[in-house]
Length: 193
Image (tube, rainbow, N blue to C red; front, side, top):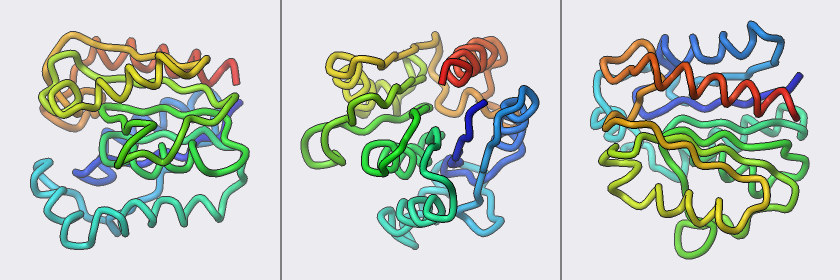
């Protein structure tokens, strides 16, 4: 079984993020789901992003990176949207990474926002909706396609729809069918690690 470090999205460590982590635990995986927001959750993405901006994007990302120092190095790093920032940084820069699961967001592996090239031997899955104005409209899908084109064990899964947080069962954006397929793919990914 895998050990996963799972980072929440900009609305915080919601009941839906807890539920997703619990699904992975239920089949035997160890899942760490830290709260980067000190117990705060937000009603909208904009409210959450405002909180992140007040503290600083880099500082919030580095909170997640620092948390990893307390855990073993052989982790799968996972993140929902904003949580992709620390997850992808750790997957690309921390020695021993077993894999990465990037939900709703993806950073490029070259250029200004990059942490550098994708490391050899670190598999990655990227999940997003094909008409999500953030994932498909702000360049994340292009970054995901770049990774898939250059990394040996990389997969991009697109789901029909326009919701950003579609796998968070506690939010109105939840899509049960897409989440069931996403979860099946994630469990298969973790099973082979």
